[in-house]
Length: 107
Length: 414
Length: 46
Image 1 (cartoon, each protein chain N blue to C red):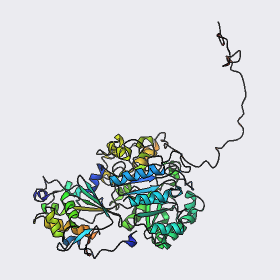
Image 2 (cartoon, rainbow over the protein chains, first blue to last red; image 1 turned 90 degrees about the horizontal axis):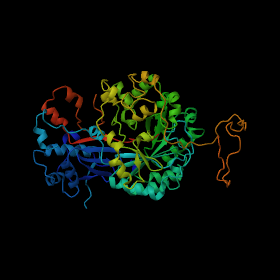
Image 3 (cartoon, rainbow over the protein chains, first blue to last red; image 1 turned 135 degrees about the vertical axis):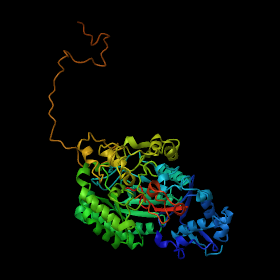
Image 4 (cartoon, chains in turn yellow, green, purple; image 1 turned 180 degrees about the vertical axis):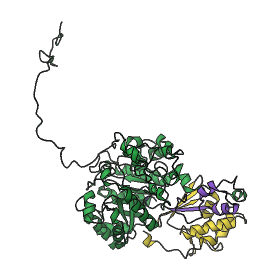
């Protein structure tokens, strides 16, 4: 139940992008389902479905966990500098709906 | 989408598809599905969509149900809506619930509350992947119990109280909108708020026993407008199971997907493992197969001819020329079917009134495929059936006995 | 009118796109990588 869900830090404003220089990760209650057209993300806490319209964005999301920060995850997924603002904005949308959370704990 | 579409001109750019467009074409796995675990129920609601009451001896065993869950996990189905009958009367209900959530299949289940004791409520509150829906069809015992049976109002409210006491937040108070409760929408909201629950309103369908009470229970045209305005005013605070998209023809679309997901992104598995396009369409016409077939549920979902047809682009038929078709999509397939209307025409509750002439001249109504209603009272009879024993006029002697040894037995000459 | 999805992202308003020429900038704005919807209660039973 959402009651026991750890509250993420204040979500970034989706219109302004997110802090690419911080580490991010998928929320522990989010399930990722690849699709031919991209991917579907389902959050068991919020019952929200997010539709990623692009396989590269899926690659970025999957690279977050093992990357020191979001910028590195984008690079690892092959996002170019000119594409970066667009992907940063998409990540901000996902963070705004708690699909992504800042990774605060050092593993 | 890649960078190329950013620089392309609007004329040649392939716009990013919308979720609804992709959903209409179907997915390799359902988003979620309804699973009715048993036809057994302690109640006999007059509008029961699955004509439930008595358990069916062919219902899936615990092992078979777990095999279905394994398939759902492999297909990455996000969650199942478990219903019935009353699912909690299955002795293995909690075993299956725990098995599903342990295998990453979320569970939302619908119950009349009969088994939601304080102890059960605490157990449910401890599972992050479970959602509970308590059914209540009147904000007062009079309105509710007329449909759901004596005592059912108290049972539901006791269950809500137990869930709230156990600390379970956001239980769902699930209401089927009828002619008799449209005036109680604010009261339902108050009840939900009182227990820290969320209100969920869904549409009455003429499915199962609902066909028998549809004419008396479905909201009147002016009530449809009241309902629409109320839903717009309350926005996404109130859940609707996407069941009211036919009302979108009043104006702005309601929150939600506003599309029929039958056979495209959702379906029904019934208690004996039959797979139907939608929980409101339990009829051979919408039967896609069975989870007991060798290819299992996966095979049915991916290979059913019926589902393939439902995933084709729909033309709109008689509704294609209506300016509201884009918002209402012709309404609910099951509602049309069980009111005897053509599937490519208007919904029986079309808010533009296009169904009324059709309803006036409809023919015989299709019957649901199964009936598991309680047989608490024997079929009505006026008394002994009078019989007069006579001999068939064409027989001049008794018929030949099986023991007659004569080779000419029964022979008539001339 | 065609905003049939509850969305927190910049969804494409297709009806407008179909009936009126859309400036390139608007299309880029609409061409978002993420679309979000609540599916709580979808495909429910009573």
